[in-house]
Length: 342
Image 1 (cartoon, rainbow, N blue to C red):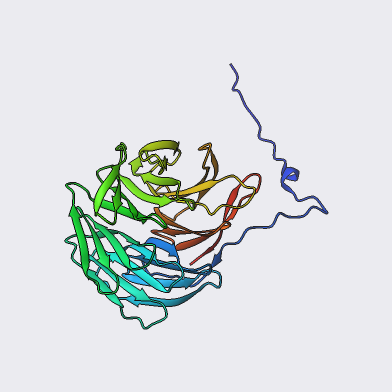
Image 2 (cartoon, rainbow, N blue to C red):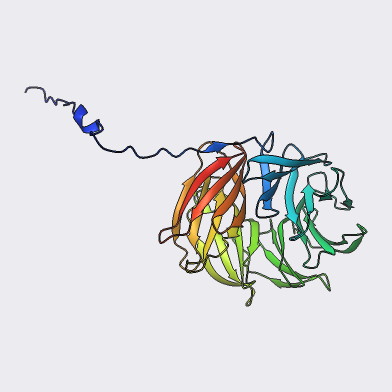
């Protein structure tokens, strides 16, 4: 029998730009001065223009992300920064570290820490400021939750629960309640007046990595670690009925390190965002749990932290490629675009 032969016909005319046709603009990502010299662990919003980040280089950096320039750098920790929080409406910044301490900085003062909170026996993974700015809550892998007086640096309360390896903290705005995630796969709600657990959510299948509170304080968002598409979800809970699961957001292939509520825009559906070790950021419809957009940042490594700045701007921290400024279009079909890196 003869050989079956096929001929490849080159049609170069198919790939030529027709005369008069306009080329689609190529999107350029602006590269600003890097905020850090190593992997970044966390980023939070300080004002509408400024963010604060921390990571393996032990520096707490205040950065003007709109202008693309570093404003200030604080050095005082002896090991990497794990978490950050700010007191809204002030210039105060709190940084937690693997050196077992939390330091307080003031953007309006020099680069020395204003206050130091010492007492934890292991890495501090959670830090949150009370609504009136007088109290600080911290949580650690030493299984303890501590309440501090910010002005004096004195530890006011301590409570240790077996296997409660704290991963993140959120102080519910305008409330005495503090929500805490843990490596024991449990979410706990604490009362800052009694320093006791008032509610414990049903345990998830995987370690809970992060949590966030909605602007109306009705809902809690938590995220899970995982691998190979197992786990790696974000979960929406009803804070008015503690332990009541509303929705799950599934689609990441590896640990979902962070999950946040997107600031609402009038006339647009409520959205949440999540970032993962699979180098992607996903935008979800909060109510239907549908993934409406996925942005993959190639080469970034794990995406470990998100900071919404407004309804159209989202900052993302990565291990390999620094901080990313993302633009969120909350149109009829939401989309996410990388604008700059720094």
